[in-house]
Image (tube, rainbow, N blue to C red; front, side, top):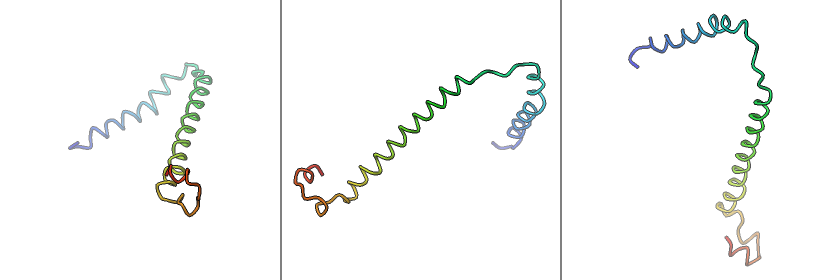
Length: 85
């Protein structure tokens, strides 16, 4: 952008809505009941975090462990295990 005025206009519009117009429009309305939606959302986030943690854990402790040659023949004398490496 060449000018800061579009950004300032967007910020001013947002602040006007959040401070004045939004509360005025919502003063006679009941709040939404989102308890069941939030439970499902939190469960999905927890499962996603568990999957991401397990992927990182597997990558770090198995792939990098083997790639850095920490599991070398001086620690293991079993020939079938060494052939897998």
